[in-house]
Length: 387
Length: 136
Image 1 (cartoon, helix red, strand yellow):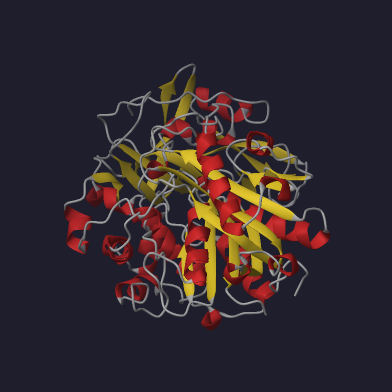
Image 2 (cartoon, chains in turn blue, yellow; image 1 turned 90 degrees about the vertical axis):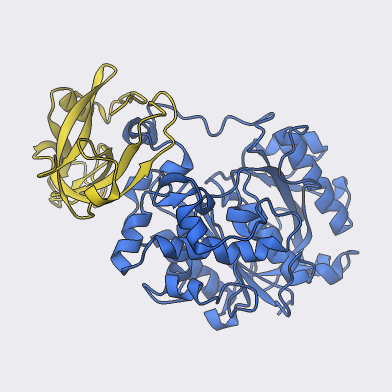
């Protein structure tokens, strides 16, 4: 146990943008600000209470200055869509060390409407990806992040139907969620045979939605959290981990398993002092349908080759033993481009007991993120109770 | 192949692209630990030794994984599906590439199939691509 874990740091404010989905009237920085102001209101804090700011996409000072914050701690760690999970981990360390008191983590992305976006995604032809991947058409996420999937399935004797089962399981959660982007019931056969092909073996419904939106978190010490108006809604960080491999997908150490998932999740379990049977709820960053399959195996919730049967059994659906991606996930709920913030928001709603589709009695939630395709990984374990 | 981005070599990668321009596939090998590595850099990926050398290799390997991209974006031709593949060379390094000369049909693209290198013009350079051995 370390000072940054074991419930010593709390999430005291959590909110998404007021709207979600298609928000062509808002720029990226407006999405950050809307989410940030909602999260501060949720925490019962004012702008002057914030002394630390972390974000990815825009620079941290673009967000702090826009909001009127004078920071004494900044974190602009950018490793793709799980950056915000790393920000939470780094903020916990900073709060535990006294380098910041109250940290705001913001995400906003006009992923669908492309209004006022930063240029972080711009591809340069002399980068590693620009030289060794982009010339082959590995540009869009659906043509890059997806490439290892056939190997994963082949090594395990699994098939495209296992990808489709992930889509169907998560759609079941989304159907009852009014903020979810895709809510229409769908079958395995429809995912495989009616959904338009995008990049074989992936059809459109096996790929995430593309939306506009954002989210923000406010973190402070558990001690300070107890004195805030939001004290009864505080959520505590029990453990965390982060890791990375290659900046280009082709160089991941193994194709059919991701070492960074294994390392960061092991550190999260280790620092929390918990095992898999202690986890009530799982959020696994699902830009594409193969990712939850990699994750449940690499995190150790099931053994190698068991992920497909596990999802097909209904274990991750409503009423299952490991409710997963209960907002509908990136596949059905929302995906602005960097989804990690939304995975954390749903974990926090479930722990607070105010999710759109609430799982009864969630006390621990594991949030697993991925960044820049198979490059970076972050893992967080949250609890509704301070140990 | 139906076009796409042209790579811009950097000092550490230029030998790779200069060799490819002459239709030779060259990668680096560490003289200290004996292992090959990719992508290019001035020291060994495995043991950090700076005692490394460039080798022309045969360019044979196997198909590890792929997607058939039905939605290519410009500058590639949006109407021509791309086979975007991972191949593992006999030297143990993995590269992203395109499979050419095979139909964009999963039945024609068995995993672990043997592949061999070829080169296609791209801007001022040539791009290593792969074909299935025995493919039509």
